[in-house]
Amino acid sequence: MILVLLVTALASPITYDQKTSNKRKGRDLVFVLDTSGSMAESNFDKEQTQQRKFDILKNVLIEFISKRFDDNVGISIFGSYAFAAVPLTYDMNSIKFLIDFFDVGIAGDSTAIGEGIASGLRVLKYGHAKNKVLILVTDGYQNSGAISVKNAVEQAKKLKVKIYTIGIGKANSFDRKLLQHIASQTQGKMFAAENKEILKDVYREIDILEPSKIRSKHYLNKHVLYIFPLLLATLLLFYLLLKSRKSELL
Image 1 (cartoon, rainbow, N blue to C red):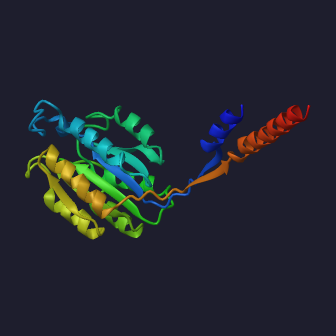
Image 2 (cartoon, one colour):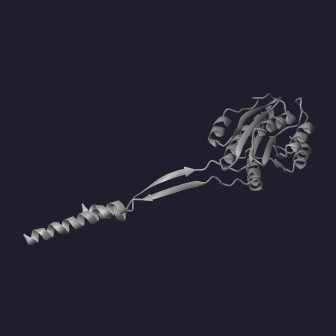
Image 3 (cartoon, rainbow, N blue to C red):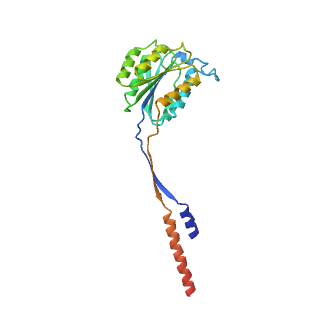
């Protein structure tokens, strides 16, 4: 028993209290995704030529948000009209789950970029972070919607929202000048992605421009327990010595 207790003490058993701080200080980040009919086009991926442009966009987006540890993320969808698909949340697993339900034509087949920006801004209004960023992804020209791009951009400027714009597909398939104007007016940046690999590079650059650091604190309060088996082993050892001495005297 003494040997067992000594070995247990040498193993240094512990208990601990674990606490995690949920105070996060990242940015509010909203993606505004084009789901118009043209997003069903293929040949965006050189290896999987039959895969639709929109499916590739979803996969790259999931990969991107998996690395956002400290941001509050939301998603807006636009086509002929726009709507908030995912409110601002820290729960990245829920976002990944909901993205699977998005599909081409879910908001109509036209392209209402102004509506999309306005919808993204409405989602951002519920956030409390100092840094607010909107990432607009489209493969077309503004041809629908009741809200003009000009008015939507003015609203973004008032709210101090930075907009990154990404035109995907062939160079003439999206309105490059408009996307450059939106980005420059809001202190953002415009990107063009002709294929999947370039799109992934774009998201990597955005990740550098808008880094997401792990700021939530983790506390571990350890309680060392080796002293208890050590004391018990010592007491048993004294008892054994006393018993041995009494036997010698008898």
